[in-house]
Image (cartoon, rainbow, N blue to C red; front, side):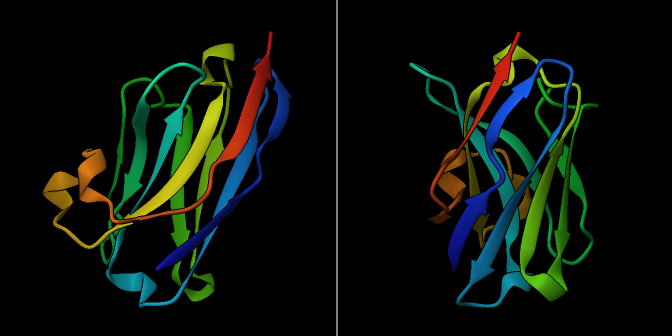
Length: 124
C-alpha cells in the first residue's frame, strides 16, 4: 500500500494540529495503521496505532491523553489529532501500515509500508 502524509507545520506550544495519511493500492482495511515520529538527531519512535476491524487504538506513553489516532475506511485515510502540543513533539511524523498481527503494533520492524515524513515544529 502507498501512503501519503500531510498536515505538518509550525504550531505554538499548547496548540493542536491534525495529520492525515491517505492510502492507495491494496485493501486499506486489512492493515494496522500507525504513526511514528523522528525528532532531530534521534531514532524513529512509535507514537500511535489503530487496528483494522475493531479500530482498537494504542499509544506510546509520551502521547497518551494528548494525541488521538483514527481512521476513515471509506476515505482510505488515517488521522492523528495532536492536542496540547509540546516543544518535545517536534519531529518528522511518518504513517505506516502493517499486515502483521496486532501484537506487533509498537514494533517498527512490523511495518512494511511507509509514507514520506511530514514535519511538525512546536515553538515554545
